[in-house]
Length: 294
Image: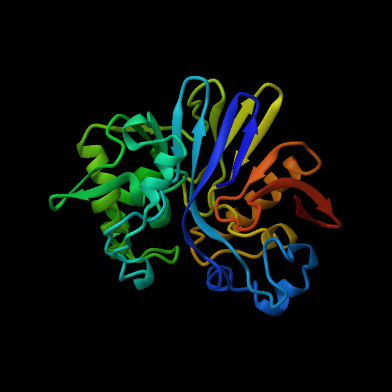
């Protein structure tokens, strides 16, 4: 269980499942041959064969006043056959691992979703006697207003431009988003919302229309949890390499370039939501591009 301390804040990674071996599908330009050329990725983030490693994971954050969970992975029992059958009807011990980290579901007071793709909202709910009910009944779920309005507006019934069919996203809405709204636990926030003294949101649009990252500041220390504006550290070496799920590829590239440039050479800990290996490090310049120093 990986854990980091940022001032008075602790962040713990809770892994749900492995992404190793499928990231070259997510980032088509990151072929094995191309990845092998980025030597600093090996061994932490790729093997000698160019196979990239990664995780689907959530982050449990403890502040002096809050217990928060950022991005709730895929979840159990969800029908995901339209996207990837291997992710369908999972049965993992994710909640047990979360509880072992000191975050039993009843103790969580805030849930934050960087965006509304299926692998970031799944444990928002769990199946109970045939109904989808909130997994964290005492929490406020913070949904980005822009993000929510995009995925639930009538136009979303048409073909999606970001690699997810409208039918598949509707299923995600029905089992992982709307039950939270119906239970009265959703709070719709703007893209720079301050969650508490130490935690705020950071706009990082492009992967989805309202995508946000999470910024942590405490006692002169800082960290950022990326969300999906980057899926793998190879995109630091090549910010132009996009994800098949980017809704606005040009904006996604611009976001990566802007945020990497802002963070390069600083002490801010960069925690990659889907990064394997050590998961976190600091960003430094590497010629005309960037790399993650661990």
